[in-house]
Each structure stands twice: as C-alpha cells, then as structure tokens.
Length: 96
Image 1 (cartoon, rainbow, N blue to C red):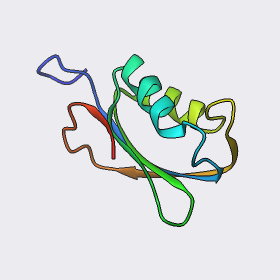
Image 2: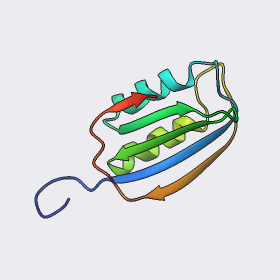
Image 3: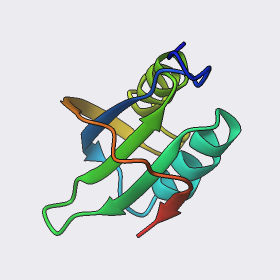
Image 4: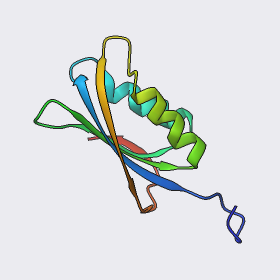
C-alpha cells in the first residue's frame, strides 16, 4: 500500500507470438483483465502477434500474464515477451 492507502500498481507490455489472431485472443484477454481489475488495452499487430498493456495490482497483472501464456482454447502461444513500464494511470481495458 502507498501512504495514501491506494494499492501499488505496475504496468507491463506483452507481445504474444504464435497462432493468436483470429482465435478470440483479444476479446478473451479483455474479459480476463476486467475480471481481475486490470486496465490497459490489447491489439493485433500487422506481424501476426498480439500486443497488450496491462496495468494494475501486481498479483492481478501477473495472473493475466500467466493466462496470456496459454490464451483461449483455439490459440497456440509460442512465446510471450514481457517488458516493464512505468504506470500511466490506465482506468479501463479496451480492445484496439
């Protein structure tokens, strides 16, 4: 907890490789993030990967990253690259 009583927040950017487009990856990611109170966004990239920014309490963000390593049932995830970033105050989760 921070001195003002708010929870510590972290931000992670992930890039997910494999068969991750056209398999409901983004919509399922949004549902997983919202269920854990994680803000940010997710989008398809032209190279066939999926990129997401996840911001929230550390345990919640790590839970979404753990989910991302599997993805929805139709996905086949081969690699997840995780980058630490400074929180920017994201308030909701969007599919871009």
